[in-house]
Length: 96
Image 1: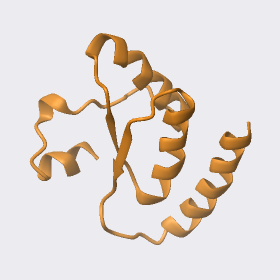
Image 2: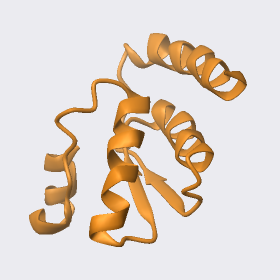
Image 3: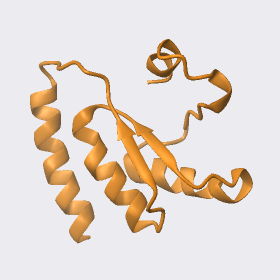
Image 4: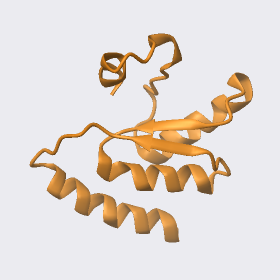
């Protein structure tokens, strides 16, 4: 996703890559920890389209409501499986 953003002329200096986000919830927690030191008021989530709804929901559950999202405009065969997996994961996280 970093390469995608750079290709879209987003400066490297404003892109944060979470190398310790082993799953979506870990990434949300790691990002929330940065809000105090970096003082940002909003976040833009960049990921595959099927992953955005759950990621935004987790940020909102962590009391960070100002979340936008974007994804690349292409579809891969594995997205069929991933979309189903995200559907299950969304409701697991939402109800849990």
